[in-house]
Length: 404
Ligand code: FEO
Image (cartoon, rainbow, N blue to C red; front, side, top):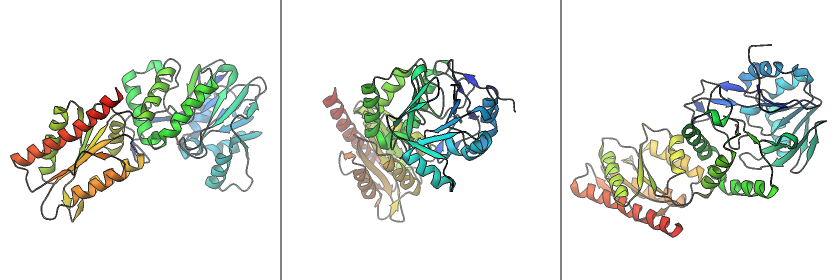
């Protein structure tokens, strides 16, 4: 039934997912290292499949399952999350293996029915605390609503101390190594942070709640199995701590300068702003929008306390690339930020005022009214841009000291 093999994770649990080496755009999120869609097979007395894969990868998943058992032996399918990267292959999987039961959360049942227009709804729904008897093993369900969809839940296999965490603690990272300790830690930190920033950041208050709940439940976790990227076995505490830190977004000595430029004037101002932030003691990343993907900007914002945005004025508005970026990062709701705006203009110069409004809409504390200059910045304009950087930097440093 194919050339692919399952990877044995524990005595009874196998990875039977798929590797997407070529994906570079995941609904607008740049995935430079590809991704995986993880599905898991529990070889309990009642063989159970936890999640499936994106539709084009059905054969790869079936081949990996077949390397362990005839897929028709699977009695139970659990869908922890309804998004199509985990359920695209679900209808065909159900037609092929004909399980006795399919389980999802209440919201998951509704989502699957709506997605697939099922007339004979095959899903039984479960709630937090429900337990499923797999014969010789038990699967326990914990709903995680809005992490990151209303349907999301995680499943815990008590006997082997395995938590199937759907998108939670995942990352987009293709590879032939399945475990965290087989992969460079810096790559893991970057890809996990980029994933958190782009998928989970708006739900950070709920992430805090989930982490507190897991602590309160005192679950012993030997293996943390997300639906993307590596399985955590050696660095479970580390990824939980990182998620805790990212959910807090506590003030730090790091700034993001985001800008676009038409003829180089706003770009020159951006360099002067950056110098001002450095003067104040911050580490700065300049991100020109034509060279930086918005999903990488999100990853940087997650570890920044200051955001300074520059835009030329075009037709009485901010530049289109800046508008797109502000729309995207505004939706991600970065917290505890200070900031400012700047830009060059030719006639009317509305961009800085518009940017200030957008930043205030994101609850960014502005250091001052920002700075704009007509045409090419002269020495005085560059000095004023540097002063803007210093003002924002000072405010960021003061916030850090309050939290030291
Ligand atoms: Fe990996 Fe929310 O889907």
